[in-house]
Image 1 (cartoon, one colour):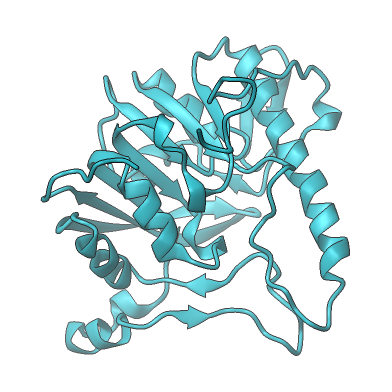
Image 2 (tube, one colour):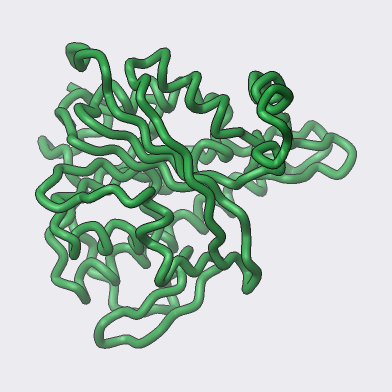
Length: 269
């Protein structure tokens, strides 16, 4: 049985959180009975673009990296049966281990931060009378007991992971039909195709040892590269769209890759 299963249940026990002071909101949102909360990301009005226009109604959806639940509850309201997967303070965030930084101290602070994001999810969950279920763990070890999903979403997740291909491999092993990947956009899509295709075969390593930053971002990924990755995993039909969303009050360029399975789902182990 997977280590993610506690007390005989795969799904996290809903946590009663009523005090917003115990929460950190990753997305700006309106919480019924509490009012509006501001987060670094504001996707309101841009949800359809962020999710690549994919219809989630009647679908079982695995959302990797739910954070405070904005997209989880949006997809649930649109008719999806959502399982929200994320870290809890019991797991370690993929922080860049700079030799010159206080890695242990930042790890402790990040665990507290993750706990407050979890709290925001449960405050939302209770306020909305949500039926979405949450599972905590690491994407590198998704429990086979999760079963199969029609759709998987990874919204601004892969850039924060040391091994984005392993995360995709584990996620797509649970995905029957469609994967939706959203990430920050570079300027490569403005370069002539014959050049951008060659450049897109690589990944840009973000960490800088001199400044010890960024602490939580590993890669700048291109949609062309991700198309190649998911094709290896059986998702050879894909399309890419570009859009802009508010981050820290400024418009930020993003891309969304929607890829569909073209080869049979492997047996879960």
